[in-house]
Image (tube, rainbow, N blue to C red; front, side):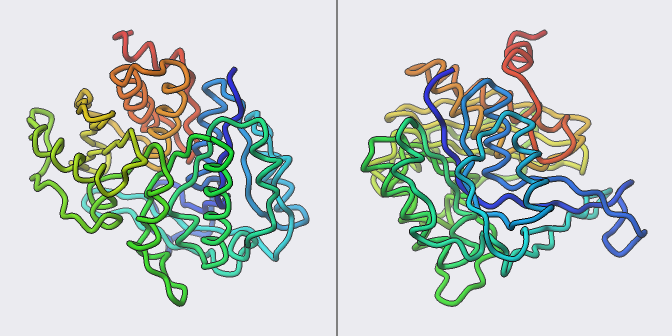
Length: 341
């Protein structure tokens, strides 16, 4: 187990229905804890890393239950701040047939919504840490949460931590006065040593049109040279970033996906295996599994970008087999997939 990895974001309560029911159907909701940065934390914990998750949750039973859930997966929550009125939630309607999934957020006014600079003792939190992970979602919640995020990344850089960033653009969240997704995400990426995103997210954050591609199939051949040129341009925009990953997923049906990824590593381009995944049990948190897998792999196999890409992609593939937001998969299971076991 290496040095501490710190993640920062809003933990959420996810409400969903059984048997692919619509939100308007039935009377029963199932509750699961999640949220991008919490998903990354739990996945890293499953991989044997020492992880500290930082957030703000309310006092009382719901806040206690949320922290107990994270503790049960070995996550250090000692730096979570208590305060505010309620935990943020979201309602998830699973995709079925030709019907797309649907997410309805209820985060405005949550405890994390009113996070602000000065609430978190970042110097103490980072004192024995090596990596800080954040995402664009924290900046989409509110202006004060954005300010708290930038306080964290600046302190992390000053203290010599490696900063990893998931662009995580969520169009429906950028609602507060003065919100500017491209400007804010671009600035956040400027502090980052490693950036993850899909094609749409890279385009939103950089303002540079994505590489054109039709519907990816299991036999699709990617234009690697076009992607190399694209990420050479990204490196000009974000010169601090030495490692950039692009996730590519095509949802053929609700239970049949095609998934791969590309890694730009210090000027070289690496292409992952193209996985044909069927059946997909739960696609939520696949990107978070990617990120956690890469952070872990880069600690275990530093300087081996091929191994890091293969491992993180396999971690994401296996997440499709796990219900809920957390990727409850071990390193041994990921290596078994890579070894054909």
